[in-house]
Length: 318
Image 1 (cartoon, rainbow, N blue to C red):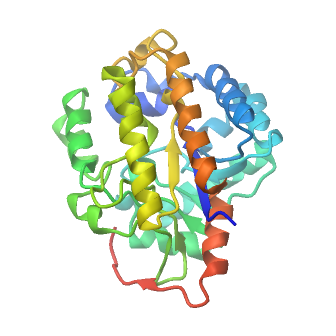
Image 2: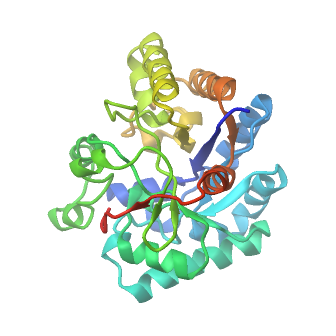
């Protein structure tokens, strides 16, 4: 039997990207979900693949998003929690603020999709021992906020150079995409000391380079051949090292600058959407060839079932 792997998608909306970048107009919550979600679902349907969608609570409160969010659940995909206001400085919140952020998202998502969320990913991989403590208290089965790569700070610098953020706003976002020390974190699922299962976003074994689709699209804008070689190398290293991948997707992997001109600052947006979708399909099918690919909950459950006495990761901060 093939080992378990997973695919997830952070359903970050247009307003959340603009907010993180410090661009004006995000307060009106501009949206592209009606445009992109059908593309995502059609792509996954062609691949015969169910995944986990991490949904932002604020989007679930908007009547205009109800139909499209319901369509995700109706297609059989898992729904998980991506916070309420998508602020990648969640690690700076108090316990009460964390509780409210997670609870409000849970309630809004359940009201629209009918699903209770059992998984969480912090915006921008924002996490802390306190966040994980609250998740455990609320009965979450897994967290997926770990990003074991040394390139997180490089991505943050690139983001800051292309943003309109003030010095104070940059200081608030200084934890965005993680730290250099995160490169030494586990690639495989593990258990925190409070018993919460962590399913890291997979990075390239040995080199710890990012392999989620945002980086592939950035490479493909230069050379699609190079992007495929990079991805195929990552798949080979995962197989050799016994790493069961957890692949992360974003809506921008299905959109281009013609679809959303406001996102011209984002890496890979000059690559036509049709070519992006073709690359996503290539990645999904290559995972299916070697692994039993499912939702994040299924990946976490397979890890738990295979671990009679799961090793505990003693690190107290992320």
